[in-house]
Amino acid sequence: MSYEFFIGRRYFRAKGKQAVISLISFLSTVGVAVGVMVMIVVIAVMSGAEVELRNRMISVTSHLVVMHQGGPFSGYPRILEQVTQHQDVEAATPYMYAQAMLRSQAGIFGSVLRGIDPETAGKVIRILPPDLLRQLTGNSLSSDPAPIPGIILGKELASRLKVGTGDLVSLTVPGGSRRAIGQVPAMRRLRVVGTFESGLYEFDKSMAYITLADIQKILRQPDTITGIEVRVRDLYQAGTIAEDIMKQLKFPYWSQDWMQTNRNLFSALKLQKTVMFIILTLIILVSAFNIASALIMMVMEKTGDIAILKAMGATDRSIRKIFVFKGMVIGVVGTFFGAIGGFVICFLIKRYEFIRLPTDVYFFPTLPVSIEAPDVIAIVLATLAICFFATLYPAHRAVRLNPIDALRYGG
Image (cartoon, rainbow, N blue to C red; front, side, top):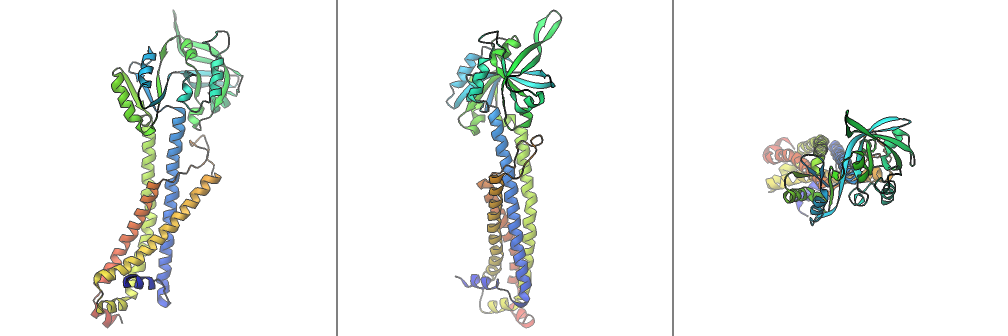
């Protein structure tokens, strides 16, 4: 052990007048620990919100969609075959959607009606289990016009309509057919075959699924779809794959990946996370001022010791090391215990889920937590850097002391 570290370690054992310096050092360590702990918890919660929101959105939507510039298009089997031939495409399914009104004895509510192919939709949309898709197929108009077609409702939408499995609802779709008097809304009675819950309140209160064949018959648009939903092997390569598909299909077809669709939302989350990181760094800065204060007081208290060390041949670099060492010990110890405390709190929040959130306001019922290594590394490095810079001025003051004046006046 070098003598600089030996002397710096002895300075932690304060006695008499130095007890105040020791107390300030302790409070500085606690301040750093609290700051790191709060930063880890808050950033972990915000990262968890981003991950949870992404997972929920991916469960109800596809990784990318292929559409036509002019809107709904026909002759889609050829396009579907070209899309599925891409080496990075895992599955694809056609879909068609329309704005609709659903009515029950409880009232009338707006809905987004989505027609899907039960044979392939389950490979792309993960919230619809195979059993539910089979029930939807069994009530389809495509097999026999006599049975009442089936519909799958979001949990919140079914709750608003006050209907359950087996109940009937009335569907009204604007512009379903053309007659001499103009556009006439299409109307149909449907049987609820089940409900789903995605965890996204806005989605669960408005989305309804029927078969693609049924919505085509209701809208009188056979062999027509709105687009093709695609699931890829690598979620984060969806943008590149979308560009490849656009080059292959060419105009008038275009594609959009999930990151482009939800760009505003995820950009807002990332900005909020960055702002919170900057704001919470102020806690560390307050502790850094305490570290600087403790070291300045120590320099004033140890004037005579510094003069003797210099008189014995200690270099400016050695003197600087002594005070930087003490400041960095405060930073390292505070960071270590703060990180442990943050990990423990995050574990408790995730394990016991004791913080409940209103689902009509937030996207998730409990507080999500996700500790990501880059975030923790950034917090640790930022904290240690702040603590290091806080030691430079006190160390500089110690170096500038004149040993002759210090021995004459500092005793």
